[in-house]
Image (cartoon, rainbow, N blue to C red; front, top):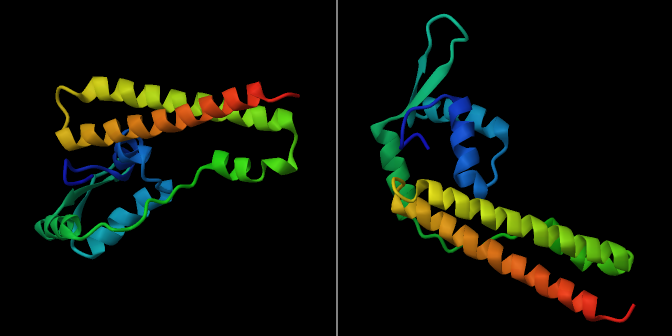
Length: 164
């Protein structure tokens, strides 16, 4: 995130929340601890505000840009990790009641629909000025959420078609 512009840890938290936080989970503490570690490694610099809250603004160094370029050039063959509470609950749903299963399907459908709608709105807001690869991440997010939304809609239809 510092490759785009210098930032304080709080500003990084804001940027991440509106961008890569959509698909890569970060502990908020990591966004405060990691810049200091990167500074110790010479990958970023820290400028401390005189007086006031003495905020630290971090900037990427040439060594940091080189490390980023090296990371981008590395192969990315890892499997996508899916951690979806809805799927976990669906797996164990035979231990609950039918009303719980239907409620799960409704809530997951609504959740994925809302997230897809939000990604679509974000895309429309940034389409004219954002980096095209950032837009592509939103497009994949939209497709993913719409696919999962469709799964839960079909599942609801399946449940509604079953005799009670």
